[in-house]
Amino acid sequence: MRIAVDAMGGDDAPRAIVEGALLAVRECRAIECLYLVGDERAIQAEIARCGGNPGRVEIRHAAEVIGMGESPAAAVRRKKDSSINRSMDLVKNGEADAVFAAGSTGAAVAAATLKLRTLEGIRRPGIAVAMPTPADKPVVLIDGGATTDCTPEILMQFAIMGAAYSRKVIGQADPKVGLMSVGTEEAKGNALSKETFELLEQAPVHFIGNVEGHDLFEGEVDVVVCDGFTGNVILKTSESVAHAIGKWLKREMTRNPIRILGALLLSGGLRALKKKTSQKNYGGAPLLGVNGICIIGHGSSDQIAAKNGILQAVQAVEHRVNQAILDGVRQCAVQPTPEAAT
Figure 1 (cartoon, helix red, strand yellow):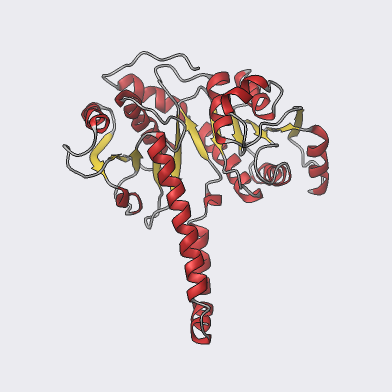
Figure 2 (figure 1 turned 135 degrees about the horizontal axis):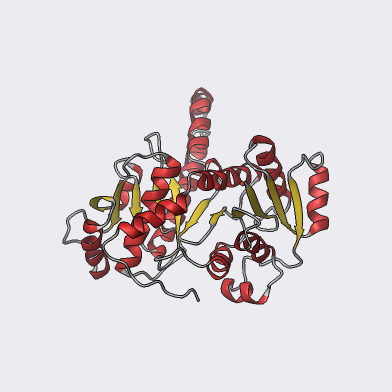
């Protein structure tokens, strides 16, 4: 298996990305070759810092980088020698089986859509984000921000894609799919959600009806479907709430000596909770629906997150996620005409 990695994407690139990539190669024998794409000199320096090339790692030079503040689609078209474009080219040309990128999410989505195109029958791609729950397995939220304006057909396809990912990678035998709405009753929601509800009742997924925001973390649903605008707001709000709770806990548990003692007694449990809810565990989120495996990492990814994102790409290839998506679309009674990516 061959994995392309955008070594220049992320807040701490190339340092964290290169280190994470080397960790992944050392840990996973299934990786036959890992391509580090970006500034050759900078990447070589980081490899040397990490003790040298462990083997199975190649550098592909790219002279440009797309920054977080740039217009994604325009930058992807203009900067043809950018690390994200060159990474996608490796998959497009059959030199790599998957790509991991932790820079601009918009640039990764634009590059993947323009270079790889969408799978046959798929209207638009969606980001499938694994969110931790008190249950043993996470819930998949799709879409996390790739497609903000959706039609009922697009949302139906998100359900098919999310269910395929939950089944193949997370291991849910029969994923329960819910549609994000403002109430659980069928009549609740706007025109888009009501039309989508009707399509999902006929789709080849285990549709359990509408779900609300609080259902995300209850563990009763495996895949939650929404448009990318709603999904991104949910993700950012969840991250903010988690951060705020951490700050409140720290402040309240250090107010006096007794609370400090209690905090020391709880420290093991608090560390376990922090680890369980960390985005590092997943390393990134797959962009489903494109004709290739693409894992998008958080911009703040450190070496552990980068390593896990690369290993997630390996899993997606091994479990043939895209084939499962194609099978689901072909089973569907509604077969919308694919739109050309723009």
